[in-house]
Length: 246
Image (cartoon, rainbow, N blue to C red; front, side):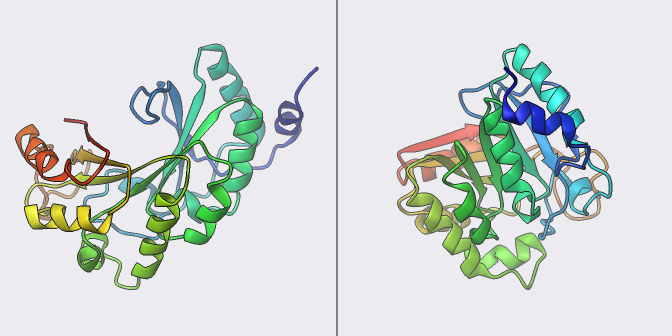
């Protein structure tokens, strides 16, 4: 007997929230799982070091639900048991919760990446997702500079942080370390602001193809030496501190 999710997908030719999928399965985007990565376009921040800057503006055309279901069923046949939803900023899309529910009905574990600017949506997602990753860009006092977004409400970031820390599920906070931007004091301040969190991830900045060379950002990925230096600073603050992309 076909599941309700399969039937709903096949009959639904509306556009899903998903703009694109990573062609190959990922071993790093969902800890402990082989996953497909789904991209949702549109973001409310303009981070100066954004790797997916081509997804900042919302796209007009997304993948139809029926086609998405076909791709995902094939993925299940190839031993993929999880999905990571990233962006852009997924929580901006009104159909995100529907997407998570459909993925769960198809048997996938679901991870969502977020910038934490919409705690209202996080409240709806936390009971149904399996993993939540929140980017913590910089010390709060530097957020407006790092995100190039002067009207960002910092209390929203703080609210999301608390929601996640108090959640019983699997989560991580993560910072993309950029040479010349993130100082030792920045990292220590972030650690203090994330007090009580279980898992913190340091990941390397990797210049994206086509990134503006005149924006003052480094033209090479963050050196491993700097990541290890900051890892040693931060590891005393969390149960688990991880280096990723080193």
